[in-house]
Amino acid sequence: MSEYFYIGIANKAAVCFPLRKLQPNVDTRQKQLAAWCSLVLSYCRHQKLYTLDVLEAQESPVFNNKKIERKLSVEAIQVVFEELRKKGNLEWLDKNKSRCLIMWRRPEEWGKLIYQWVSKNGMVNSVFTLYELANGDDTEKEEFHGLEDWMLLRSLQALQAEGKAEIITMDDGKGVKFF
Image (cartoon, rainbow, N blue to C red; front, side):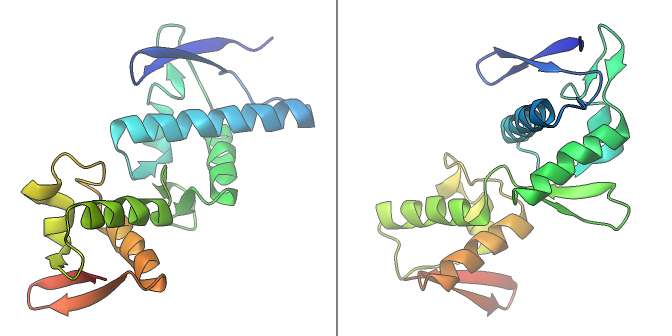
């Protein structure tokens, strides 16, 4: 029987997951990986994390239960991360697979949220710098406020592909015009 740990996420909901090792049975392992993926994405969303280091992740409460002195191995974490990559929620930043971009919300989903805000506030046909959009006073209460540049750019590229925005070059960097 695997050991379990509890972690509080958003609203202090307790979540319980196997900690010691990945299960050998294919069906059980798939369910376990799905649970790990869900937990990792929930944790990253709650902490607003967009990049992860595998060794640092191993020390996080997601993979390390200090009370019982148990943590998931780096190899097992990489298996979980590889599953997230297959689902489109992660991209490796290096060949060693030690650092990654984590996408708890995909660029298309961020783009949709941004465009809804633009439309709701009557700002279609307006131009914004990327900084204004992600860090401006007007967006302070929005979920996309503080979005890292790489994800913001991908989100805007998704909107551009839909014909809802155009990424433009400005004197002080990049900007976007919404249609």
